[in-house]
Length: 421
Image (cartoon, rainbow, N blue to C red; front, side, top):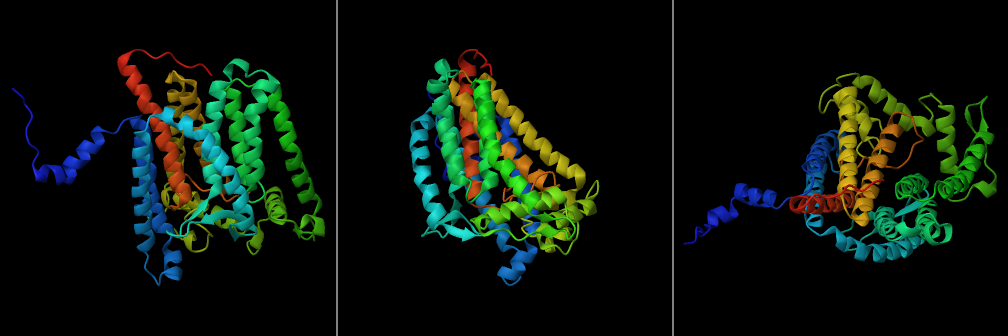
């Protein structure tokens, strides 16, 4: 005799019942889920606090509009995580190459015809929903998916320069070269993360050192130019020759100069952002001013995106800032655990590559805020105000959880051997 019973309409539509059924279908590492939810909660609180002046200027004082937008982005982002984590991660290896090939013409098109801001073209505007997306976000995701695929297939010949190294370094060079003209900081971040992933993927250390040496040449040239064209006596940049007034070169030079010489004069526009960030941090102290009590948000440019970590420290103190760092490190630790337990190379490299890029991006954003790194346009993953970057971050996390879900399924059947780095 069957124990099944008919489900009433009230049970079917009850939010509590629906939530229970949804949670029962949620798999993957529960610690990662908890970290994501905590960062999303922090995002709602800090974005609402830091967008007051922006809302007053753009929406006639309607301060709730950005709160509703952020909640909507988080809801969509959680849906992206949920549905992408339900997909078997082996399917991603089939689309990795397609996404990589698609991202190349998209980056080229963005550079010439994309939405331009601060002399750089990073965005494409979607015509129907009027949302701008950074094609570099898609390119990063596609690159690490493709790298995971290549590393898993080339393990037998990975030490060979022609058969192993050239095939895996070529996509990295292509993507970084296409991103760099409009967004040098993102290109350097992607390159550094790729080198780390290739090192863990057993690529020959000599080949990696050679690549790093070549990549450092233009960086050293940039720093040399920045130092040469700075007048220490007057505390300002010298006039650049016409040959250096190309693209975003003047912006890169000024940012390097501001970082190297650390001009503390508050009336200097070039260093205004970082000075205001330091003021926010100093006001926060150990425990902060309390939620919604930030004073520097009305003076700090982009307090809801690039410099949101300064607002976190001002309102929640150094203790709150340390907790945010701890959450990202826990996220990375759990992803490394997935890497070690995943029996298949593609899943292991996929989870590790995506987690590295998210955590390194977070650390760079926080380093900029405390003046340990030159100013960049890098946002704080899952915390900065929602946009295309937020959704691509959610997709990356969903893919990581997909790997974790399949590892859990295998562990339920039989012990899984660990994958050695």
